[in-house]
Length: 117
Image (cartoon, rainbow, N blue to C red):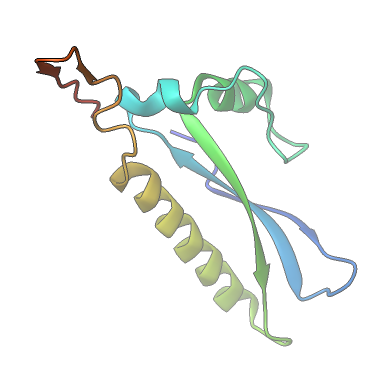
C-alpha cells in the first residue's frame, strides 16, 4: 500500500488556480513486475527511500496530474476533487489489466495461454 495517496506538488506560475498533483496507487501483486522500474523516483521531493523503493519494485505506481480550479473554489471541494481523482486512478490500476494474457504463445499448432491476474 502506498504511504500516501495524494500529494500536492505545486501551483503553476501562469495560473495560480492550476495545481500539479502526484497520485500514488497500490498495484496488484501479479502486475507489479510490469510496473517495476529500477530508475523510478517520485516527482515529490519529500518521498522517502521506502516510497521510491516501492515505485521501483512496482508495488506502487505514481501519476502526476494537473488540476485546474475555478477561482474561489472552497478548499473542501478541492480536496474532494483530488480524492475522487485518486480513487479513479486506483480503480484504473486495479481494474484494468493490459497484461491479462501476457506471455501467451502459439507454436504453429497449439496455443499456450498464460493468465496474469
